[in-house]
Amino acid sequence: MTQAPPLPDLGQLSDADKGSRLEEEFPDADEETLVDTLEGLSNLPDMLAEVCRSMLDDQAMVSALRGRIGDMQERCGRIDARARKKRELVCSVMERADLKKVMEPDLTVSLRPARPPLAVVDEELVPEAFWRPQAPKLDRQGLIAALGAGRDVPGAILGNAPMTISVRTK
Image 1 (spheres, one colour):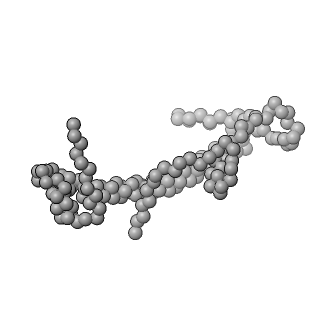
Image 2 (cartoon, one colour):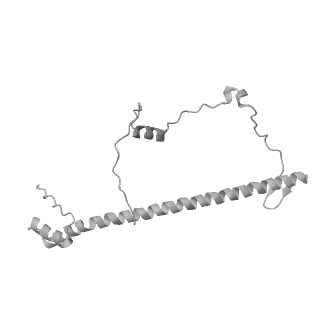
Image 3 (cartoon, rainbow, N blue to C red):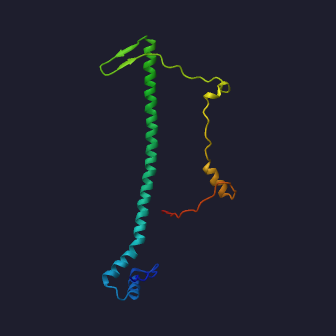
């Protein structure tokens, strides 16, 4: 089986010039093949640009969602704090009124003693059995900075950088 010759480098030629060049390079090719080839050569940059536009839209959506999530988390925190204050208010009023139970069709509220909270008055006196050992955690950003500055760090190197794209908008 013979392989087709590679397509010529048509660079920044106009579509008309690309068509003429393809006809010169492939005189036996039929019109439909030349048109399909020209469309493929012409549309690739347009398609890549469209994918990049879509990527920018996705990044904008992610940014907007992060902001919205942050707003919603703040709102959730405010609602949670409000619920805690209401709970404390009910507890305080029931305690002052010496009311042990409130029964309603949809809920029952009972006043009862809670567990005593922990108060550590001197950490140095607490026996070792109550301390949890913490595993050391690798400072990845520190390693990257040191290696990037040219320091030799045993057990770590900077790997080969993958290719990436840069997309600028006006």
